[in-house]
Amino acid sequence: MIKAEELGRTFKVRRAVVHAVRDLSFTVGPGEFVGCLGPNGAGKSTTIKMLTGILAPSAGRVVVAGLDPARKRKALARRIGVVFGQRTTLWWDLPLRDSFELIRLLYKVDRVRFRERLDELCAILDLGDFLKTPVRQLSLGQRMRGDMAAALLHDPDLLVLDEPTIGLDVVSKAGVREFLLRMNAERGTTVLLTTHDLGDIEKLCRRVLLIDHGRLAFDGSVAGLRALAPEETSIEDVVTRLYLSSTPAGSPRIRPLPPAGGPPSGMA
Amino acid sequence: MVRAYVLLAWTWLRASAQYPASLVLLTLGSFVINGLDVAAIWVIFAHTRTLAGFTLPEVMFLYGTAGVSFALADLLFGNVERLSQHIRAGTFDTMLIRPVSPFVQMAADRFGPHRLGRVAQAVAVLAIALAQLAVPGSRAWMIPLMILCGTAIFAAVFALGGALQFLLTDAPEVANAFTYGGSQLTQYPLSVYGEQLVRGVTFVLPLAFVNWQPSLYVLDRDDPLGLPGWLRFASPVAALVLGGAAALAWRAGLRRYRSTGS
Image 1: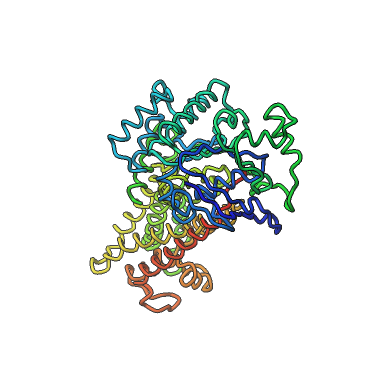
Image 2: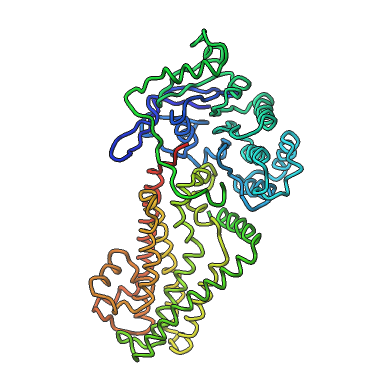
């Protein structure tokens, strides 16, 4: 499903070259459930953006669903679903239902299949109560459920989520997690998510990728991750120890672009 | 492309209909503000009979053709100038995960009928000018063609301005110099400007082909700068060349896109 080979991305920041991601190689098979972990600025989001075709890699190569993301971005968009926890892809001023209908038309999903899919997603995600509510009036938990439904309406083989549980309360979080497990188990959807929530990792991911300073620091099971620091009891302590002991391999941690300007307009 | 554009534009139209008062005020405001442009022309002609050898109806013809072209390009593609806002807010990323060209999504973004106010105002000026000019049918065929080419040229300038914002994310105003600046420039006979500037907008950034060169044909005028006569039929070529350059620039910009942190 995903095959990355020596993937790298550099950014020029005031004439200095910063390696946000370097020499990243991994593969994800169909039906896997993979969590991507790493401190802020480690290169998780940059990696996700290269996998989804948002950013072109500056080194190495990556194939997702048999396609080169940067070159076949539109074809890839039909095969994958993407959810950003920090911003919605829904239309802010329109009822949720209208966003779904627009997505049906943009992705050219057959009307009958769309109907079935929407009914199914509405039942699992409990969207019925707010389908007619404008997105701007939804709570964060409701909006996130709407965003996940929107990403799955075209029945993608791969679902990529960037911090899907950020800011959610425990009940909403549990709902999101249960939904993702169900999609993975029942539909065989491959799931790749990034998170800072170790509960996500423990409850969801059979496999963990730890990215640090743009490199792959660990690739294995949750049990394998725990074994890296056997003297620690909780997963939080294990990960804290790993983050603290990480060594900057030649490059400072830095964000690609400083977030500037006012609040997001329209679709926040 | 067209289908996706229409779908998105329709969606934004319905979204803007959620705020009807704002819609009406913006449309009226745009009509009135652009009307002040015409008032400026009248003020000029209150002091002189001709402007660089052109009479009031002729200047209104130039203003009207440039205005309609620019207003149509602005209506259909003008939102591309908001690219840097979307880049900084991170919302451009969400456009890149859709199976639709991000240029189409940018162009249709917040599609608003309030921009029709500017179109209506320019059409009114053009109609008044034409009523007084009595252009013979043998030359009037050029008018729809020049408006089409002018719209394409301004659309290409908008796209170039958008492409520039991939590089100058913090300076979107640079692009305005060419879009709105170009619109202002073409509202008057180009012969009021210096010769170097006219050569620049003929051979470098071909704004002279929006209305100036074809208007010399429609109005049956000699070129005040003595440039070759075939140039007045060259608008379609200029539109195609500039459109091609804009498409290449946009693609190059998209490849260099850096996204934001997080």
